[in-house]
Amino acid sequence: MSLINVIGLGYIGLPTALIFAASGAKVIGTDYNVKLIDSLNSGNLPFQEEGMENLFQEALAGGIKFTTQYIKADIYIIAVPTPYIKKSKKIDPHYVIEAIKSTLKVAEDGAIIVIESTISPGTVDKFIRPILSDMRKESGKDIHLAHAPERIMPGKMIFELENNSRTIGADHREIGEIIKEKYSIFCKSEIIVTDIRTAEMTKVVENTYRDINIAFANELAKICRRDNMDVYEIIRIANMHPRVNILQPGPGVGGHCISVDPWFLVGDYPDLVNIILAARHINDDMPEYVLKRIRQIMKQTGIQSVSRIGLYGLTYKENIDDIRESPTLQLLERMDEHLAFGIKSYDPFINKKIVEGQYFEFDKFLDDIDFILNYESTTS
View (cartoon, rainbow, N blue to C red):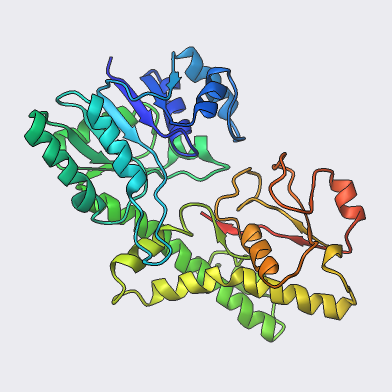
């Protein structure tokens, strides 16, 4: 039985490692975070997710191991963060590069490296192939490369791992088919094999499309607010048309997909992106728009102090404990910039303090506010 080493045990890597192990694969999970590895080896999960605990127990029964070390394996799955550089908007590939370099120190001839992290089109050509080429010249080892971009959403991770279609990008069809066979042990949906650059672009396009759709909904919300129209009713009726599917407006876009991936295209194709860039600005400006609405409502209702306002929701979407790119935190940053302090917050899925004014008892939270915002974003 071939051994799979999953590199990076965050919101993507950990569920992926667990479902492989629970499905009968031999798996070792690797992460540099010593506390995380110790916690997993003690039987504790780092985040909440429906079905995760059962999957964890099945994976443990299947023999999964966790370590801070890279180990010799047949297949490596790279699932590390891929942020973007704020100034240039280009991908910051250093986590992927370092993971690849560390993998190559232990990988043997014929091993396959699969990048699950979302990367911008051309990332493999620009940053990864030169590393493999240099290694091949020095050692003679032939390491194969594939890209299988993740397609899961917190809150539905297990369901989507099993039921979402997947894309496998590879230089050689036979390598793509090997990886397809591996993912088929848990993926019940269609798995497409294509080339690497197409796989890179497809994932970024998926999230960019949703970002544009959400921006359209947010712009509609502003238009409808100005003339006192119900944007939700308008969207509901419009969506009855068989070829219309408008998403819901929200206070911003959170998570590590929709709020990040479109910037890759902005950074790489600055002279071509118009709608994409406009959508990014619209969605990133929503926390500021919400802040203005809060001020309008305070004036209308006579609320004098920000400390009597409560934000329900700190995560970037409902029913999860993931705060990455959370619009709530973006709003709090803007309030801080405006010297507006004292706003209260509560989230039933966050059990540790992450901001000032955070409550852990809902009844106490309600007792101390006059105005509550259900602050849930439109998400990835």
